[in-house]
Image: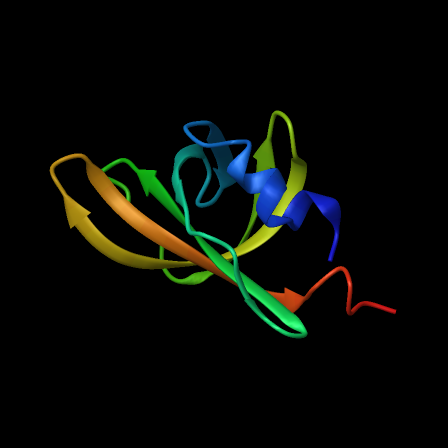
Length: 102
């Protein structure tokens, strides 16, 4: 897995914005949580929780996102809930651990 998609890379970007280009205008999604890294040899898994504005629903799909530190990423997000602060999306990662990769 590319370094930009690593648990460590995302954990270092909490409370920063990922810019998604969908339906015209760029949309900012804030990274508000990175779950603990779970190891089940030879795999590692974790998830991200991102928050967007209440007024703009994004359907489940893969999106190109731009981030100031991580660059351009392609991430599959799923809407999971809504509250007064916004709409929330989850991205889950399940990949071979660096030790298991050839």
